Length: 133
Image (cartoon, rainbow, N blue to C red; front, side):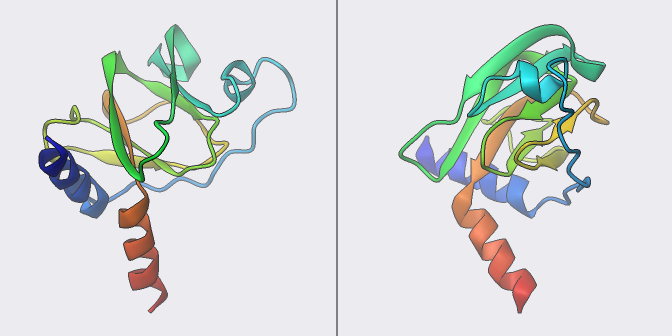
């Protein structure tokens, strides 16, 4: 199971990411980030932070993880200090589209339905080392 999860995350990490310039959270209490508890990542079933809210806490004690959404989501707020990957496929299925969501970033919509959110600290370190050289 761990081997399959790592393979899935490795594929997701090497996929072409659509990077967006992090949006600063609005100062008012109605921003998506303000509605998402600190240290959590939140997904909404609808675009522009509408529909049902799903709040998650980043798993601790591991630098590689993936969390399946109970239902597909269309928007996300990252209240963690990690750069997360919003993925089209569920954790157990490699491939599909993926988009990086920076710490403190609100994403009002994606070009695909988000079915999982993952983090790979090892993958990010390898990518950063490769990019710097």
